[in-house]
Image 1 (tube, rainbow, N blue to C red):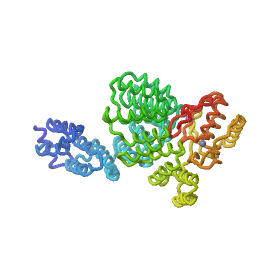
Image 2: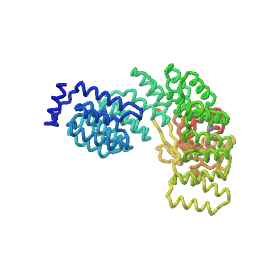
Image 3: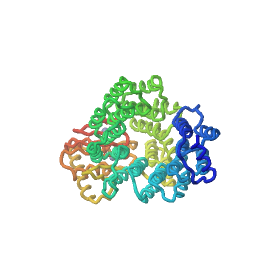
Image 4: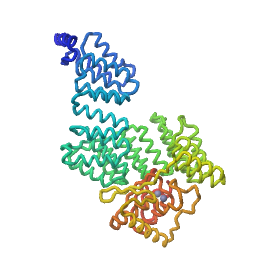
Length: 571
Ligand code: ZN
Ligand code: ZN
């Protein structure tokens, strides 16, 4: 009680000389505020109203009160109460408290005001490490990765949080190669001897997975083992995801099995999605049953994996059944991704009309993925009218989708509607729609190489094209005719028939033939869907040259071996 009166006296005369020793009373109130911040029950009074009651009782806030209170302001609608708390911080003279300052930066950035977050930071005469980290993180969370890097580079010192946040920032915005480059930099001696932790490693693994950089991923795995880092459920899940996305589903399974009995729903879901992506439908559905048997409750993510498995396996009635159980048995309301899977399921199975009915009956507006799914089914079964419907909607939702314009003009050409063909082409010119270049990525000797369709930027371009010609000649000798004469609808988004020979995955294959020894499996990650011509060529290459080829396109994995593909030509 006495301590409290003393604090009050000093603070009323010298707000900046505030002594912030916690008192028994403030401790109790702080605990109460914290409990309300952590509570998810909406009917509870807000932490701010607890603070007001604290003040009504004449209890002074201490250095712990404000950080707790500021934590309760974490999204746009909280900016007003956030500012009011800031005013109280000022009033009670806590503006120089480092913990309070970082909390303020974090609060403004979570509430979407980067300017105010920056202002708080700029008012600090000598920012400490947590303040630097907070402002860097604020930029990164706002998607301003360049600004975040600028702050990172200016930091007088960095700890593992600084490095991890910057790496994660790159991963979140899709700059996976930058994430890996920064991780390499972190290993250098002049990085200040900062050692990565589990948080860093899971971001790095995520980057490897997205890139399909298996060599990098394996190295990270070895590093984790060597450093004695505990492979907890989070890190384990990241590792399962990495191996699955890099095409090594067997290794993913090994890591998953080694994770022991305490796997959470995320771990199960990542293994389930991995199996689905690789087209191991039966194994995937078995794993799902096992998970249910063990009492792990599935969530929306799990069901995306399960439904994907049904799509890739062509299991229509099973897919319908899981879709039903999802809501009825597990109380999970289907999200747009689940509807997308069902549209894909019907479309690929040739039930294109049913697929359209699903689109029309969805409780939410269909997005590009849903229309894209309808399009891929319609293309596969050469349903011209349905393709037109899907394409028109795709263009409406995303007027920059170059592939959609190309395909739509092909559809009209097929229908003989030449004036429409002209109109679409004109539209493309007016809107200056740029084509998304097809890009394939391969990792050779731990280095990532990127190839674009008709690319001549690689230093070894000449050798690559010569090798490709040699490969294609051998295929032709064995009777390969290619698929260039196929129906217009079959044309790839990448366009012209002439370009078929030089699609990026073929360049990547030629490069791997130059750089790797006989019999080495080849792994390629492609940003678009693999076209039928390339697919046919890959099958034949796998047989003629005895090479195992694994291609991850934007839909799924294709494992080519001895002239066959794991997708059974169904993708
Ligand atoms: Zn192709
Ligand atoms: Zn395939």
